[in-house]
Length: 310
Image 1: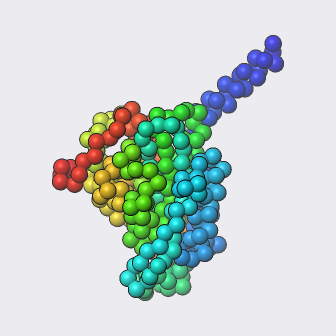
Image 2 (image 1 turned 120 degrees about the vertical axis):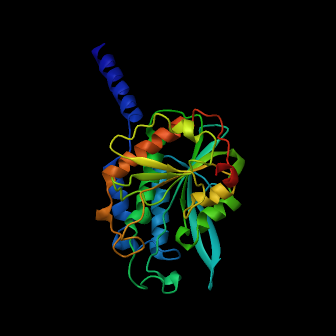
Image 3 (image 1 turned 180 degrees about the horizontal axis):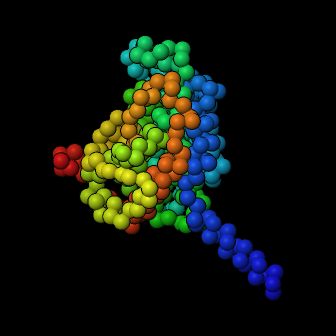
């Protein structure tokens, strides 16, 4: 009897731990340190470091038990042309959590950065490694933490989840443009898209900005009661912007965009891992979890276009 009781308590404890999992600063730090390491040389598009970064994300998706999201593969390859650079190869990395639901929540972040700046025609110092810790190793760390949360929280959510690490963002949102033009499931089936880009340099005097507040009728109600703990946030109505959520918004999908703002290391070789505030990022992700969970109480968000949201 005692053995059965102890076993039951252990199982209950394990279930409780799974349900209580929250974003981890240690995991965030580990991801950022790898993606922003000298080994990956800035994760440039069409550079070995960018390929290694996408392979790393696919490996993490596999470990978390996510299904390959693109025709039985984690990779969605594409090519694009940018100025004089023709047929540049890149790839999105897609992991899918199938909850047998009617609609899907897309969570995204771009994994690429400037690399050694070879494709930018002198706009940035060519040959210097731009590690891109905040831009956007921090967003990928957030992507993986949210994937970990929704695969390990012990719940079967009423929505499916599509986790996408986009390639080619620094070259003009190429990965998200390609995805919205070649979705693996109809865009009509997307509840909303949440994008994270530069969420690692939290400034308490500014707070974290959350864009897309005007992209769906229901966002004001969903935001009610969200507890920010020590993290301050503010909202912005715009669905358009300079990151991958823009591609989804102009395609008719409600969006949210998390961003801690610009800084002096933006697009410079000095955007290094030790400058990312992992504890604050974990707090930002706790806000994201609350928003996602509140949004799952709504059957389907009603998209609001640019003119109507003004």
